[in-house]
Image 1: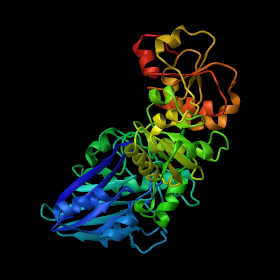
Image 2 (image 1 turned 180 degrees about the vertical axis):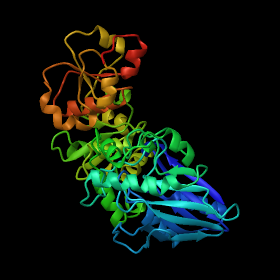
Image 3 (image 1 turned 180 degrees about the horizontal axis):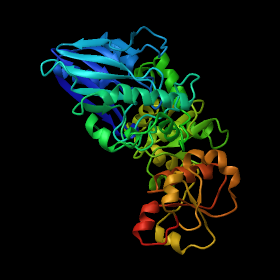
Image 4 (image 1 turned 30 degrees about the horizontal axis):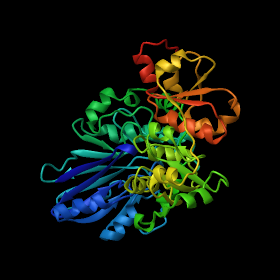
Length: 458
């Protein structure tokens, strides 16, 4: 058996390629499918099946494009209700490629149609050696019961289903069975996922907080308490996956001159969303007025999906064409396809055209510590803030900032801080877009503040 995990860091997403005797299965593919085609060519095998463990909400899958390019059959849980030809898998159904068998376990809870797949290499044994758990069981965590896909079920109902799926099916497997989930640390599909990308059933029984012995009622209460708000693009992506997304090849990117961007951009008419994907320091040194900054170096796709509407017509500003094209592709991974084009020549061309620039000063923590008459805005998540923050800093998490802007005073000087400077650069760009004029981005963030030995409140 050939077994390979493909891991996409920016979305903390794991997909799988399994092959035997020149036949293959791809499980939970990302939207850009070329790597699976390359793997099939390298191994000289045919992709026969494309499996989705459930209707993913945090990214758009490439299942339809991959099936169209290979002739593979798409496999979903019978309860998914997808709107295209597919194999509807139920408990105990088996798929075979060469000498490998994949056997379905119906494990509702994260979503009603969730499946786990037992992987059996019959050359080794007729017993399962691995289990692909999708978002049912993560390393160190389990799937949230409140995300898109419930279709009328409450989080409490789904959490109860998840408890039964885990205890009646997944945890009955042998302790040596390897666990391979669909997401890792940083994914919003769980609360506290480990950085490890695989484990065993035995290790998870011992170490996973959600699998410790407890009554169903206690599990339901624990899994539905203090849930962070799901990013707004999640329901959209789940429905795109239900319908099947179009090919990435159909999404074109067009070079726009500075004059075209100035004429139609967000500066005057608010027709377009100008999205600058450079790092915070470059953005702060000079950017298109009215643009927002979400850097490619961080969790770009998930933050774009959270802060940019699918109705916004986007213009990309990047350091070069390759980065602009990468930005467009990564937007498409979360279902944002409405891109008008990119600024040809980047900010250098904008400067050469003599068009106006806005700036945001970047300050370090020593400068912040010595500043008077400045309000500190911490845009980290609530748990991060409560674990330790700059004294007297107010907390408005970045994902909620647009709806809380009215609570902030645009006449005051505001220094924005996060963990490192990435999210705070995005926040300062949003505030500047809303006419806040005296803004500072704190480079290095709270991590640098703590490292400098300055006082921290909890």
